[in-house]
Image (cartoon, rainbow, N blue to C red; front, side, top):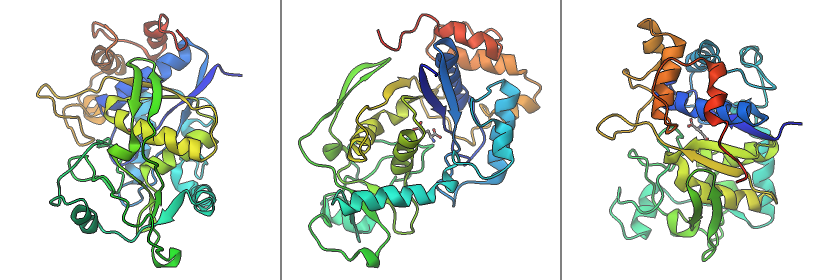
Length: 322
Ligand code: GLU
């Protein structure tokens, strides 16, 4: 029985870059140092943006770097359908959403982005509150990764469920979500102010990042979520949704520093200078890539080459339950 289960959950919408390697270092480092398990989960819920080529490359690069998941291996993923691949989970998402809808916790929404902008009294593109990760592709995200707060237009309007596939989660006002981030300390977020009732499924029938990730973490027994600080503002709404789905024991949360370019820009999957593929092709060794990533990970590491099996010692002194 592992002490905890955590996950590495890349979206195959691009190649791995140093930001992912930093995440993998935290995920595998914490797990291997403290008897945890690591699930590999391919977050390919957004079919339009995911490509098999990227998925294969991610699996290859993980092997090359020496990150071996517990349970399903990278070869299992190569072999085909797998419950830890989100595109194989639609039936589960459907069932969970239907459950929420029958309890009145989710409702159909017929608003377009323009409707929401108008109802918020905002010019299109004006944003408030929460910022979600550029890597996560919530279909409500604007190009800069921010989103409009949903003003609740369809909350009390009886939109026919048959007229649209879009469903929103009812986020009640006035309740803060508190959690103790294992690295950043106590946090309080108000999902109602940040995003309002958020989308679980969009008009085209795509389940959103927010919804899939919470259902998966619940059903796959993930009890430690480790991810970059760019996703910090998503955490309150995810904890809220987990509770609405009946999760009584929320997962532990740890956000690690985000790797940025020298000028502060977030790395993207197309970032040529930080892509694991490019570094590999240039003849850089896996140990050099791991060392470089560890130096950027907020671990007080000097950047010298590092083998995957040496990573746990960087986490030995860290306590999950201080
Ligand atoms: N799929 C997300 C990514 O590519 C991570 C999701 C999460 O950790 O919640 O960064």
